[in-house]
Amino acid sequence: MPAQGAANAQKKRNREAADWILRNSDPNQTKADRTRFQEWLDRDPENCRTYRAAERLLGDATRAIQSDSALANIKVKSRSGGKPIIATLLVVALATGAFFALDGPMRLEADVIAGTNEMPVITLEDGSEVQLNSSSTIAVDFTDSRRTIRLLQGQAFFQVAHAAERPFTVVAGTAKVTALGTAFDVRYGNDDTEVTVTENAVQIEIDGNRAGSVRVGQGEQAIYDYAKKQVAIAPVDSLVALAWKRGQIVLDNAPLSYVVEEMNRHFYGRIVVAGSALAGRRVSGTMKIADTDDALAFITQALHVKATRLGPLIVIRQ
Image (tube, rainbow, N blue to C red; front, side, top):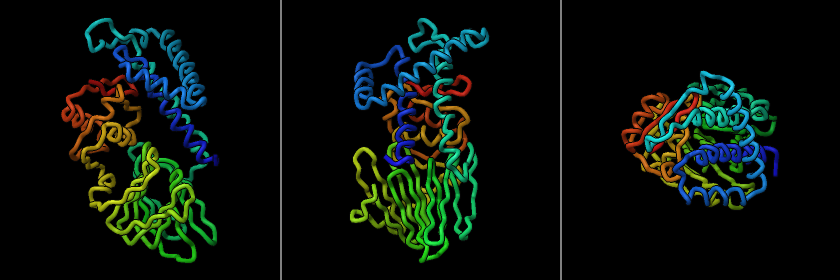
């Protein structure tokens, strides 16, 4: 596996391990969730190794909390109103925080990093412009014959300067998007890659398959689903698709997991969902994604759920 693909796979594995740490700490965890956890461990030996590393990190965090009386005395009542859960969520916060903070290799590779709640506009040396969404990262590789941008994480909008002799390509994971004199948006997500075209067209290749490449025209959006390994193309309202540039997000029956992924771009800690069933709940509407408090209020009201906040961690639960 190429270095970038291996790094992306490990990053995804770290995220999944951190999520399983949270789910497995829930005293009301379902049998279905326990089965899915075992299936995840059995799927790849690296999953097991990563989870064991997460457990060791969790143990270190537990010992750190126990040695600090101020932290050790934090208590959170369980949903049943029974025995308090002492500092469990804070422990998970430290564990998950460590996973997501340690993107050292990616940061060394990056040329531009947008911080939390930053959406910078960068002018490249060829005159093209790139606007990054919050918590997004790119690496720039320009030569005399080609212009390549690697979207290492997050989302970016590209306004491409015309130079037919130097193709302009954005690489997001295994997706390669080549501009055909255009403006377009690429979102490199946890479950899929979205490409939205606002001017002219782009050509998309998956896994280097030129013969199977697809053309996406103005006013269209292509979504590459990692699990299905399929690209779906549909008309899109660019004002809706690019609402992130205005600090908003427009949701049409979107799963909560997607919403939380977008909220995390703008939050200095970590927002997680307690349980896969809740993560799959659907929500529609327009929310201020750049305002975490407003977004949480929208979610809790729309889905009738609760948000528990402990330091850098917010847990959305039933």
